[in-house]
Amino acid sequence: MPSAPSPSPAPGSREPARHDAELTDSLARAEALITLTPDYPEPGVLFRDISALLVDAEALRTVTEALIAPFAGTFDVVAGIEARGFLLAGTIAATSGVGMLPIRKAGKLPNPAASVEYHLEYGSAVIEAPGVLEPGARVLLVDDVLATGGTLAASRQIVAALGGEVAGAAVVLELEALGGRRTAGDVHALFHAAD
Ligand SMILES: O=P(O)(O)OC[C@H]1O[C@H](OP(=O)(O)OP(=O)(O)O)[C@H](O)[C@@H]1O
Ligand SMILES: Nc1ncnc2[nH]cnc12
Image 1 (tube, rainbow, N blue to C red):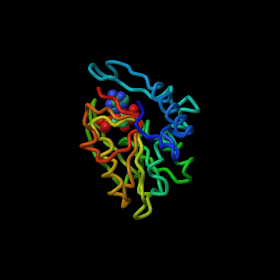
Image 2: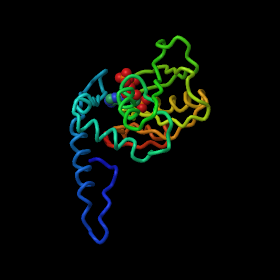
Image 3: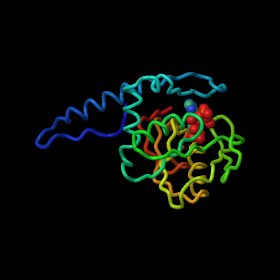
């Protein structure tokens, strides 16, 4: 079940306001669109795919708004982590009226200003970013899945190396069994999977 945001009752009422109930339903509908594929990309991994959520206009809008809800007015730039994080950072940038910083996988940028190696549930990788941030820019990090937390932790290092400040981190789905929050720090997660 979605965990955020929680419904706020109308004054003098024990019932949630209708718009909050609708938001909860819409989030539950979005969560149900996340598909599970066993043994992908390697044996033992249960892969979560947000493609069906992305292609659904209502689900995409609801998830975009819920990802930024706790951070309104606190960030100047949204950073998306290649590749799936790009998709959400794009919608957040358009919705929030801020710019978007692409954090790329290694070898895609001509002159990376920062580079960090990290480990994932299935392998290791290097991310890089261009030196385009204003000093002190407040950056919201966005990704689809929090698993081991290696990607978000590396992204925090990238933002610091660029001279920015991390305003927060938001993901669609947290895989709790992998303990990523211990590595990635505080993360706003819309949905939680226990396994
Ligand atoms: O918490 P972690 O263990 O670091 O894992 C989470 C990361 O793994 C996936 O990306 P992946 O590297 O598979 O790249 P993709 O977006 O290009 O598919 C996902 O989109 C996150 O970025
Ligand atoms: N199980 C998983 N499903 C989707 N993306 C992931 N990134 C790391 N682990 C993942």
